[in-house]
Image (cartoon, rainbow, N blue to C red; front, top):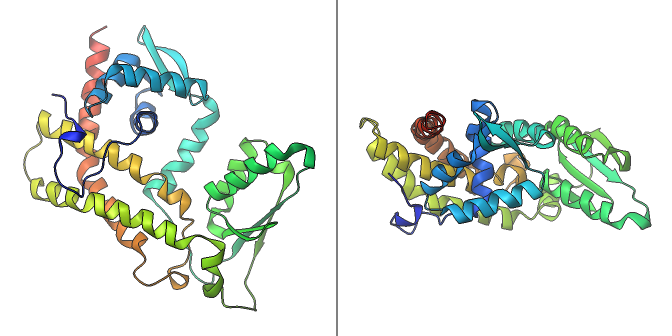
Length: 293
């Protein structure tokens, strides 16, 4: 049965994200459990379950292939796609950030970054700046960036795999005096913008939790699993960018009623409720397409 996300009622429920973003989530959640690849027919079938027509799916697949995110492969003798080798480590690292986000303590060390790029390579400079932001760094000055120390390994791996380490210097540091970091955190990171993203996530998904909490205890069937799959894929796609934009700053340095904490709890509750049902539906679709060879 096709489940259209757009059919769901209520102001707290989110519209479908962009098609290519959903496909990336689909690969991250299910392809690696099935040999790393999905048949085209499987991708189309699962995307139809959230109301995306085959033409939109094919167009998004083509775009992801051109960007080097997925590669063409054969899956049980049929056309399919697998995650490109160059992005697999990023997905593995993303699992930890998405499902097990860490929050630093106020006495933890900080990771500092500075970089030097020749004037003739301005494009590299822009790439490094955007990458630092993506990995959760805040800007102390134009030439000095800061992040919680627990990001150390993921940051070094991220820049290393992209060949950018030759331009950067990283340092681990303690705050030993001067202005209280609480006073500067708001100038190093755009906390109001980040808090607004968390607020939006909460507004869109509180109703979803109420709906599925009421269904908890009811037996699983094909229809409810299909709906869980649709809700879960959208939920993951909405959520997965937030743990990157939020580096996990110490709660002591954040404003009161910081929405991230409630949003993290909401996501984990929905993940617990939806993930098993969604996985059953995805497994059925993958197995059915394999049997239809």
